[in-house]
Length: 380
Image (cartoon, rainbow, N blue to C red; front, top):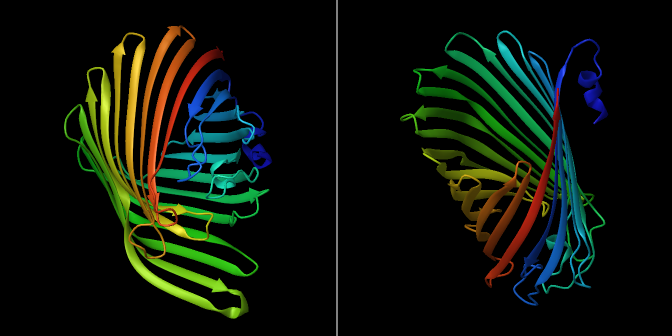
């Protein structure tokens, strides 16, 4: 975080207008199968406290935003320890006459119950996952209708106090794109360029490195005022180099496509969206997986102070050349009731189903939560 002082501590750039927002949330939840294991399924109640805060300083051309999120969730069960998480991020954006820049530095530290359990559901201890992320985006106007955009994101992930029986590898991961964009009309924009990623993990006796790179195309098309679609697709060369102790190595090269297709429809009092995605998934198991997703989301205002959100995601994940290592379904339903000007009551339901090669039986989990959120705002 101190690296941001180069931006935050520069003199004289008057970020005069500032606004702050703080959300305090308390709630209770019931979860089934907290171990998410096919045997020894266990249900537990829990209490949740959450803190979300954002402060932003704005000038005519620049914005500096600081955010902090925290979560503490003790389970009312003697076998379960409390889970907690903290996320902090700093974002700096600046608009020049013919370009726009954005820098991001983020830190996250969270405990994980799922990875801290053996497959038989026995609690073996807590584990913490620490993530440090940096990102940069630059867009330059070449003319009134063309632009050049570049972005890169890099993360380093480490695991602490991992219990015996749970094998996790620290890993580094980075992605980047370079795109030339052309606005053909008010409704259609196309882009061509390149996309790539890098993944590296291992310890003294094992190392796995995966690199992808290839051409990429994109398009944004507004079919009408309410219906739009977005396409981002890349076809990449995939190189994997796995090295074991005593100099033994395996090299593998292939080709695969990645990207996303999204269709969005605005309603009179809501929105519906359909998305298809294929992404690289960095993994703590030593491999970089490929995940296929199909997602449907729906948002609707039921009354002046009552909103509903629903989302269902189908997941097919594979690694190491297998057809499918894991299939899963995740569905969520949310109701938000605005009790007062700054007080919101929320009800949430979540259902998860999965089947994997390591645990061929079906695994299911349910969760229900009630939350009250109080907002505090200040600006000048």
